Length: 162
Image 1 (tube, one colour):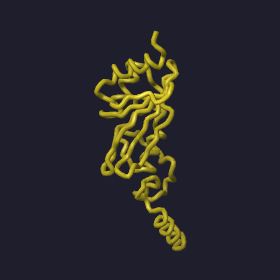
Image 2 (tube, helix red, strand yellow):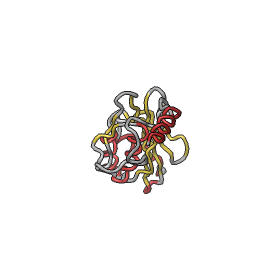
Image 3 (cartoon, one colour):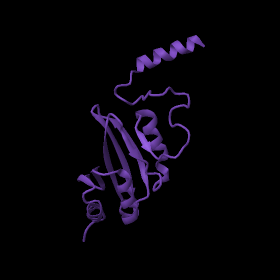
Image 4 (spheres, helix red, strand yellow):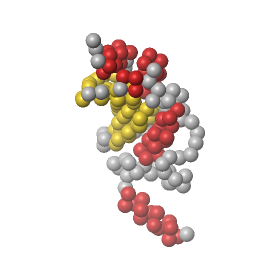
């Protein structure tokens, strides 16, 4: 009889065939994969076919050569955590929001916009997060190219001029 993890992997691979690659269980109940199609398409399938409706968090990384966005999901019924990684180019980095399916992703996606400058298409309107509303445009503090010292110096100059 297959374990819950084995059954999850079997279903996951069958449902997402051709939509993810490099599917691996690196340790018990932890599965990783790389997206080859739009994340929204993947999340729709996971929701419709497997009932996945919970995201633990989304992690955005600047790799220097581009961005990686890691979607960390949980399938509580099978006690499995799984991560799907989306690779994005440095220029014009964008992806679709998953909030139509998982509304709780909204603040994680807002964070991608605020701190990395990734364009999350169709993200519902709302306040910035986590940066303040008056944060300067095109200042993305988690990008490797962000010049913190220049930002601080400019902020100090502006404060002295007020």
